[in-house]
Image 1 (cartoon, rainbow over the protein chains, first blue to last red):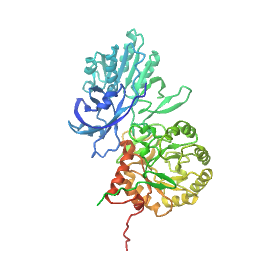
Image 2: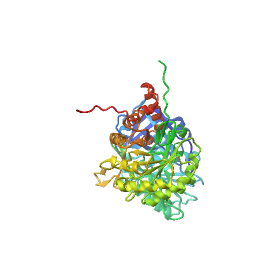
Image 3: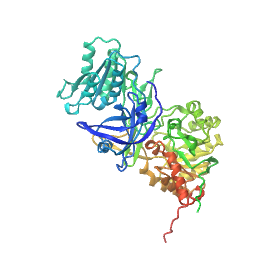
Length: 267
Length: 311
């Protein structure tokens, strides 16, 4: 998981900002410098526009890169995301990035298995695009509360990801957890050198970690946390990581992460 | 009339600085993290993250929480330890022409002394900032800074170990900050950093749990600026050593307020999280103000608050 390159703090404008599923928006803005070097798993730190009364920036994963533009897929959670959801074409926005490390796609997985829970799938889209561009056979397992909140399925199918859905209420796809889709997939397919990539709620990630260990499949997780600076100085966004020599260390999701080896995370 | 070119240079407790703007400890890492945004050579001084005798793991999560115009933190002084700092962080900072001030902390007096001795022997340390005000430690830290007798003993001990300029960072979590300020001055402090974070808390009403794992944390950002200004003013009127003012400084105008209240220099903290170039923009803002008001030197401004006596 190489630590990438130069970071930029760009003053730019919103190109589009649309509701794509219940409670979820996709915001697009022009960020040539960030678009040029953004890798799968990396994120941006977005300043909430002045007048909102909010102080800290908010971190969002980079969903896609389209030429000079990047997109971010976000869920309405609190005041910050509500303010963001009201931005329109031409509104100014301040974007810091690209930040954090990237998913490791070497050695090349065969197949790659992407497991996203809720808005967690957003952290895996750029990865899926990168994998498919390299013609890697990729499964996409997408979990959602219900049909109305389902994200990214069409985007994944368009780039040739073999996609399966699980919903909590059974309104579409498998009625149950996305982790059940994962065990079913592993039980029914012969796989040469699979790698699991996951992002979602803590409970789901913990379950995916256990499955990865049970089936001896390398598993990478994109972790999320509240962030202050996103530059590695405030130490606010840490997660607990097992050290090879024993004991643990609090590592920064913004700097050592957001991607961690699942087996290293202490839950 | 020709435009004046004000001097931003200041000398604080023997440290010559190009301008009065420092980075507040814990908000600028060890300097290298901001390389893409800030040329360290353009800062007055770099104050690094608090250092202890051995590496500290820090507190469990969650560690930060945003509150109106501010943020709470309870990091618990996660740091690389003094040896890690000297071997891995200090060499990078030696590449720059900027004074490096090292913030130090501990649970016991002996830890402060050990760290001081090692820093005194290291190459590239301009001064020590004694943290007697960290609110997130269960012993040590702030417990020194709220007791004038402990403050006196600790500073005298550290003073014996080094000839480096010694700043003492004061806690706002006291009844009368001037009592601690005078104790620090009397024990041999060369300057005072005013203020550290204010102790606060926030609660998730749905889970009825604290927003920070540590329950309480230190409040920083614009929310505490009026408190910080008031304390700088009080301390300025109580001691004769220079003050580094800090607490919610976001702009050059904020910094000027602190100078008028009595600060000889300022530190930018939480603003670094929001705008990575905040420290340099504060330098620019100070310069603009001095030009606009035709003030040749910042020193003319320090403690220049005009108060009308109430009769």
